[in-house]
Length: 430
Image (tube, rainbow, N blue to C red):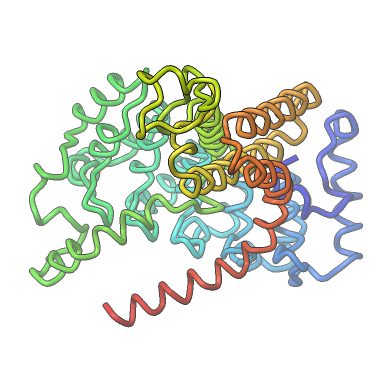
C-alpha cells in the first residue's frame, strides 16, 4: 500500500480478496459508515476529507453520495493543496476522475501548492489511463487551456512527460494540442529557459529517445536557444528586465528544479538513487582502506637488524613493516585524520544501505555481507596503521564507526538549523 493508503479509514482500504464480490453493495455499506463517523466537510489529522479517501480508494458510489450533499466538496483542498481529483489522479482511478469532473468541471483547473494540475500529477505518476481520461474531459468541456498550464517550475505536462521519457503520454499530449497552436505550445519554456526538447537532449536514456525526438520534431519542437524570445514565457510580451532577472536566477532555479519534491518525484526512484549513491560511497571508502593514499610498504625495515647494511640504512628512511601505510609512517596526524573521515563515510553509507533495504528479500544475507565488510574494513585499517598511531586507529574504527549512525541522527537537527541560519545570513549579505 502506498503512502496515502495509510490515511484511509479502515473501512475503505482496498482489499482485492474482499472486494472481488458484491463490490457495489459493499460500497453503500462503506458510504454509510464514513458518513456516520464524521462530517464530509471535516479534514482528518493528515489533512484529508472523506471524499479524498473515497477518491483514493476508487469508490465511485461513495463519491457520488458525498457529492450529492454538496458538489463544492470536489474542490476541497487537503494536504499540500490536493483536491479529491488530484488524489484520484495519482492513484489512476479513472471512473472517479470522470465522476468528479462531470459533477464539477472547474475542478480540472485546480492546482496544488506546487502549482500542479491533475494533468501534471497524472503525467508525473505515469498513470496513462488518467492522462487520457483528463484530456478527453478537458476537450469535451472546452478547457483546453489546462494543457498549457505550468507548475511552479514553469513546467507544462509535456515537459514532465519528456523528462519521464513516456512516449505514449507524449503522443497523447501532442495530439491533444490544436494544430494551429501546436508549434507554439510544444516549444513552451520553463523557468530555466528549457523546452521539452531540451530536457530530452539534456537527460538521455539508453532506449526510446529516438522515437520521442522524432515525435517532438514532427510537432515542431525546437531547442530553447532556437526559439524566439517571444516564446520564452507564454505571455503577450516579455520585458528586458524580466529576461535579465531570469538569467540572474538561473542558478537558484536549477537548484530548485532538482530539489526532491514529495508529490512530484517518485519515492521508489529516490530510494534507487540513494541506494546507488550509498553503494558508491561504501565501495570508495572500503577501497581506500585497502589502498590508502601513498600506498603501503612492500618491504620491512628494522634498524637493529639492518645496521650492517649501510646501503639500506640511510638517514631519510624510517623503521617500517611491510603492509603498513607509507603516509602513516611519515605523518601520523594526516593518516589519523584520513582514517577518521574515511570511517565516517563508510559507516554512514552502510547505515543508509541498511535503512534503504528494509523489507527486501534476502535482507538477512545482505546484513551478513555488510557486517563482514564492516569488520574487514576495521581489520584492514588497524593493520595498515603504523605502531605509533595504531591505538588511535583502532579506537576510531571500532567506537566511532559503531556510534556514527546514532550521532548522525542526534546532530541532524542542529546541523540543519545551523545551515538555515547561514543561508539566511548569506541572503542578507547578497
